[in-house]
Amino acid sequence: MLSPDHRLRRREDFATAVRRGRRAGRPLLVVHLRTSGATDPHGPGESAPPTRAGFVVSKAVGTAVVRNRVKRRLRHLVRDRLSLLPPGSLVVVRALPGAGDAGHEDLARDLDAALERLLGGVAR
Image 1 (cartoon, one colour):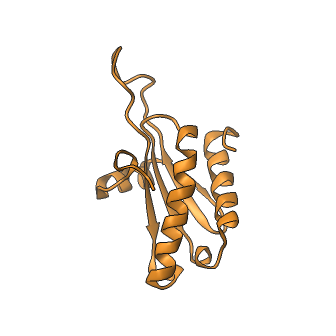
Image 2 (cartoon, helix red, strand yellow):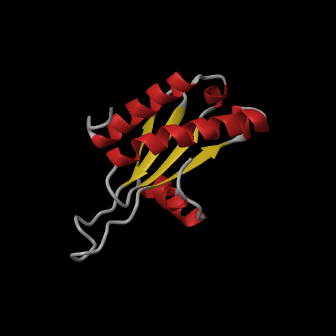
Image 3 (cartoon, helix red, strand yellow):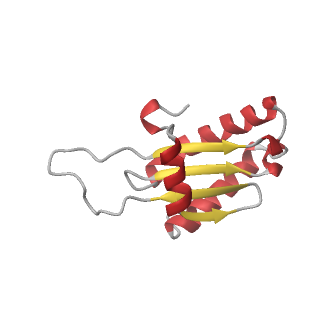
């Protein structure tokens, strides 16, 4: 489970990540990443803002049970990879229709490939 500090909730945050961030598409999902533009927006002694993630799983993925299972799997996978992302980043993971039939390993493989592409080879 993602802690409340690491969740995207506001529509504006989702829109910022999708419209102004970089995108990497894979067969099962699309990852949008918006990194903070400033090198160090905080003064000495202040902590960097947390990386926040949000998920979009439409009805095209499947029934409510399938959509919720996909969201749970994606939350778990992203939680383990938050430390790879720059502080203050906004991440939106959009599940594509094939994600409902995919296993945990398939989602992990696509998420890792997308993050690796967005981060320039830094991801797992």
